[in-house]
Every structure is written in structure tokens, then in C-alpha cells.
Image: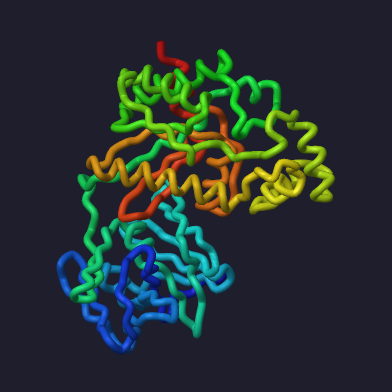
Length: 383
């Protein structure tokens, strides 16, 4: 696709939920920027910061890019896909207009960041959240309300961060006989217990240990977590149970044969195969579940994603308060897939005992490896 250098004045939104700002008119204050302790003066020709009607501070990205040391050649704009890309020190960050998904690429590694506001194209300018760009490029973000100053400080490798090893439980009895399993619960099978133990062995062989451990309040997640911790020699570590890590509630379909449920879903959706519903993504699967649920208890996609993010934020903040580190969090496949969809735009079926990595810093989550089975595979080879 034909690309050209970004010639538009691009700006970043400092979402009020991310940087708490006072309420004032745009003419009442001058927003200042400080990068690594050095004051940066905005060039009026490149645009000055201002507050929009939603009380969000807009900062011109071209100025910010120069302040961060990016050259004009480091910023590109793809008209066809409405995507802006910024590259610094081998790391590229891409934002697409209208999308809450940010893609970060560094070598062969790809990670994703969910933003609670989407970039918009308005009056020939692109607006993006500054906190997300800064974190994606390896900066800490601060706000001094007294001086109306946004500060960006280059992060150091020694800075504490939180790494959440979000893990699907081992295989259960209902997984084996192909029955719907959300809030209903069955124990791990022998094979399910083994793969959970293998996960622990693989983590240990890889040098991974944890400063804290969490699971949902359901038995299969709790059992998986204990098996992992036992293999790591952390059997005395407290296991905090969070309702938010539970699997999706499927209402009256709980415990039913998947084949019976799938037939009902296809009829309701007017499709021939359940895979057409899966491939459609979005909320279709959840909408059909709610439509066919006779109990009125099935959860929507938004409900599931909201409680999962609330649980992960609690985990991240509690771990951050003790200095950061690695955390084990055992959940389920369906709800984790909904989280993957939230971060990159589409979900997938996650294997038992697989790990999806989340890094938390500066109030932002970045999702790295998704459905990684390398630890359990390695553990299976360990005596």
C-alpha cells in the first residue's frame, strides 16, 4: 500500500481517566511538557495543547514526537488503513483511527495494548492518547496539576513492573465429555492435573517464580493454581480467590452438551456452523447465548470484559504496592479469549494450562504472548 510521511498535525489525547486534570477553559492555562527533566516549548505552528469539550487535554503529536527524539522519518501515515506508526529504537507503535487496539512490534515480538479511547480523525488531525504512546515507547507519564505540566521520563530496566501470567486451568471432566462449563464446576481429570503440574515444572525450569498468586473461586482454577505452586516450591504461598476471574456465565446452558447448545445457537443466528459464530467475533456469541438462555443469567461480552479487567487491575495494583514482580492468575478459556479480543480485536480458543502474558505499568496493560503452551511442553520433559 502506498504510504507517505505523516504531514498532518497529529495529536494525542490525555484521557481524563488516565491523567486527572482540573476543570478549566482552554484559555485559562498553558499546558507544558517536560521530557527527562528538560522543558519542551510547544511550537504554535505545530499546534498548542488545549482541552476539548470532554475536558480532555489535546497535545500535538508532532511536537511530542520531536520532544521524544523522533525524526520526521520515524512517523508515518497510511491513508488506506488510516493508521499512524511511530518508530523509536527498533520499536514500532501503530494506532488505527477508530480502533481501541494498539499494536507494538519489536523485532519478531508483537504485543497489544487496549486503550479506553479510540484515535479519531478530526479537521485533518489525528488525536491519540499520550499515556499509551508514552508507555508503548518506554516512558513513564506524570502530571503536575499545580504547574499544568505533563512529564515523560524514560523507563529503566530496573523499574518495577507487574507481569501477570494469566493461565487457563487444566482439563476437566466437562471439558472431556464436551459439556458447557462456565460457572458450573467439575474437577481436573488425571490428564488435566498432569498438564497443570507440567506447567509448574516448565515455569521452574525457565527460572520463573511468583511474588503472589490468584485464581477464581471455582475449584478447577484453584486446583490448577495449587498444582503449579507446588511444583515451584511455593506451596505455602497464599492463594487469593477473585470472583472476577471466573469463567463466563452461560445461564441455562450450564452443563448442557455442547452439541445441543451449538445446534440451538446456529438456529438462532441463522447459520450452518457454530464456527461461523466464532469467526464473526464481537458480541455475537454472547448475544446468541443471552437470546437462548431461559434463566436470564447469561453474561454479555461487556459484562465479562469489565469484571475481568477489574480483577486484573486489582491484581496489578496490589502487586505494584509490594514492589511489582511476577504474578500467577488462573482463570478460564472463554473469559481469557474475551480479553484477547478486547486487546487485539479477535479472540481464539486457548489450550488448557496455556499462559497469556500481561505487563502492567503506568496504569496501562500490554498483552504479550497469547495462549503460550511452551512452559507446559517443557515441563512434560522434566523428571
